[in-house]
Image 1 (cartoon, one colour):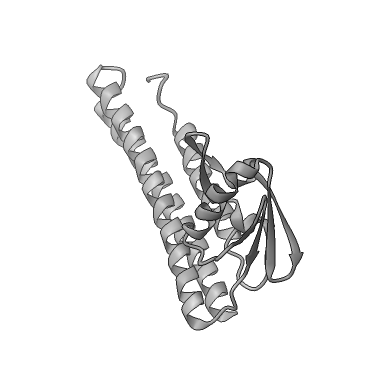
Image 2: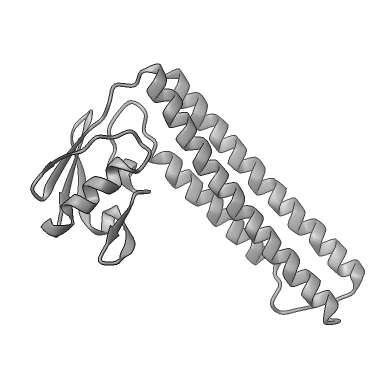
Length: 186
């Protein structure tokens, strides 16, 4: 059997995609401000996208307010733009190197927006899992073509890859449904 293929490695990569989704969904706080809300935001800084938390400190001075203290004042406008364009429906107020981010009241429309954001995060995770599945299947086909494994072995392993994919997608769907229910009931 090929050294390059490991069902455990593929499963671990799929679990990382699910874990990433969990982190993104945790950032979708519904009732209260949380510093982790801004974690998924990427800022165009110094010629490449960087996570917001590598450019600024995020704190929660009030239950419905976030405070973003940008370390490099020249990056304040880029951070402000990234927060506005994040799809979270936030309107930051820039004050020099400090940015205040008031959280809007959760009305029905806002809840639907947050549910859509959760769905888009889930779709990104599903796509990532499918890419991992495709990589695994490609490795199996190559190993079989190169004579490193039999057709039966390839078929058996491809079923395991599909089962791991199905489990990851099921977990993604479950997490998303739970988060959407939480968003809509608050």
